Image (cartoon, rainbow, N blue to C red):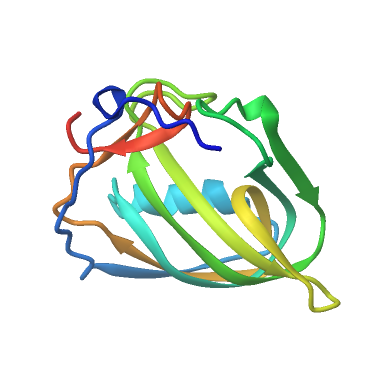
Length: 171
């Protein structure tokens, strides 16, 4: 059963009105690192905050980090399920958000872009799997619609409650 911390100790909730009218379409090529290339596109286009609207293509050498049954807050990354698969796989869905980091988290430094991506992949036999994507290489192509999140001030910072990077408007 989930043990919820005292609401006063949690990060504040927020709602922002954003404008997604500036949309970019990009094609990634075979062998490119999905995370590195999305980060490069964001930097090239001056996107400090963005959302992935849609993506299709194929990936290989993927890694997902999903929560194990019974895990508690704050999340200890060592107690998550790391799943590595080699593929190739059909990219059925890719969604996520991109915001700058406050502080440090793992290998990320203050100001780095945090890519929080979730994906669903299809196998050669029609099976589907997915989750929180941590690594991926483009197999044939990946075509992505990416929208700049205008009017947002959200940033990510490690939460003492969840142990993960959480979006904040008050930083």
